[in-house]
Length: 605
Ligand code: TSX
Ligand code: MN
Image 1 (cartoon, rainbow, N blue to C red):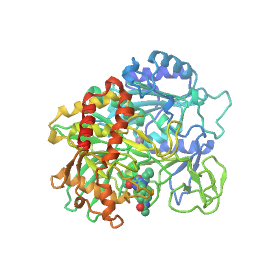
Image 2: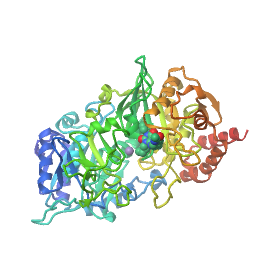
Image 3: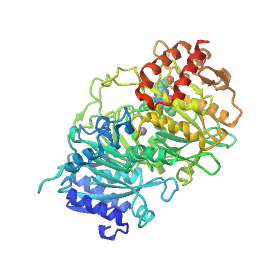
Image 4: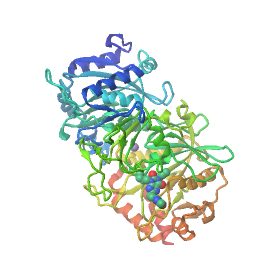
């Protein structure tokens, strides 16, 4: 489609201004068709940027290798440019919006020379859903276009829904590498150096400006940028919730279904949980979403959730038939792989795929790689390598996953990776206490970072720390206030879960994976009114006989998993009071300090 055919005056003007600033060689408005996807794929294969995988083993699949410097989200280059620094809060990077726009306009000037500007109209949520939002991303990356095809709803149908004056979130994206006359990428991944990368959000004007990175979370602007950072601000202003949550459907042997949404920090297996295969006979788990939930109250006073995405952008390493059967089936075809290893027969491989590779591989940097049983060599697949795959191909996808009205949520889960203290499952006493539990979520780091050692707890309240577009203290307040929009009986119940308890000699206490269905069953029964619980100072817990114990777990271990570790919790209280809550300054709702005091009193009784 050509620019002059656009009906939407404001959109047309916005694109024309961008063309003048960025100086692309061509402008192309995406229609979202299969042929468009195929044409751009073929173009990137010809340019040497993409590799077509084995048509028998992985039909319709491509492999990309990014620049080694462009493999993950860049949190220290991610900015919330609200008018005041106080609005962004202490956990976001802030730059004055006028200054930032000046800096970035200078970077954008002529940044698309020698390239095509793609205009991607996209919908987060089913097109036309009352909960959906439309965005338009301008990009000079064909890789971004085909990924957006999978992750969102793209094209002409979105422009039709937008009409002549509909609202959209304008999103600028450039890889930040203009080409000189006659120059080409020569099969290398274009991007800018770290200090020129900017992932910027302007919450008051609902704009996203991204520069310098072609990688997923920095470049597919519908996902973390729009559906979480900008949407969290819209949700606060409009009285709904935009959350970093999976959505699953669980059905009991009698055929009764409930929906559960859950927030987990990274490396806790959120995608695995969303696609879980239950080990308890007669129970079924289906997938609605694996990363983001938008929740609004229905006319019946209940919270309804949609998955604003259309695909999964999942971490490949660790994904196997055993850890996630449904994901392995989903990625058999029509999938984009980024930074995984390539086998001799043009298939993919990664660490934790569940089998040893045959012969030598080409690793994610493009070099020959020989398998070493002792794992002394660098990984063949980058630890953050990804698959981009259509949700519709997932065998466990729930039929209602695209219901424009969403699904009614019965329970929220919060979880983290904690070897000690946090029990297998804990039910909040009420909504406010549930918000308290969400606010103290933490996970032990699995790989040493700049700030933390392996095993130290990194607090990530609501798993939203990197994704909230405003002050986290105000975010807690929003969660407290949202309860006033309905009656307590209509609100989802709130649970803390922990699949990662260890013995003192470092052995897993809980088998996890499909056996987590035993915990979900208790949660289902609690929401249904039949499940038993005992009150404790930290919340409501299942008595020992309320959870079906897996054969591999001894009665003594089950006791450890479901016991209140008073000493551990007192240390937890101390850490929250000294190190966690003070981070949010005077924006932290006083109710949360009160609950902390109350819990400490209960534990000391
Ligand atoms: O995803 C995981 N889940 C959730 C599954 C629905 N993982 C992988 C985390 C990294 C992404 C888990 N790892 C889970 C889990 O519940 N639990 C564990 C820890 C664990 C690992 C191996 C075993 C047990 C627990 N193996 C045996 O017990 C034999
Ligand atoms: Mn995520």
